[in-house]
Length: 47
Image 1: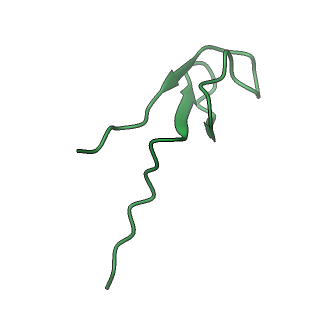
Image 2 (image 1 turned 180 degrees about the vertical axis):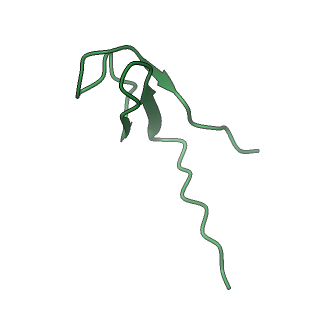
Image 3 (image 1 turned 180 degrees about the horizontal axis):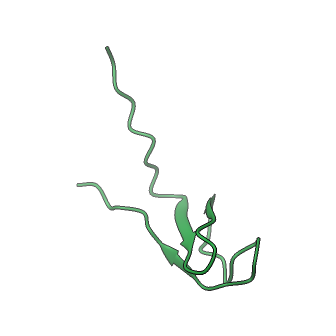
């Protein structure tokens, strides 16, 4: 079985701190597209 790592450093993976909505984007959005809450980058850097 071959495992493919879906991580790409070009895309940000963010989660809303208010509603929990998760999304990916080329740039970190200013606010959540669902509720306008604050977002946090949850991408984990790989070495």
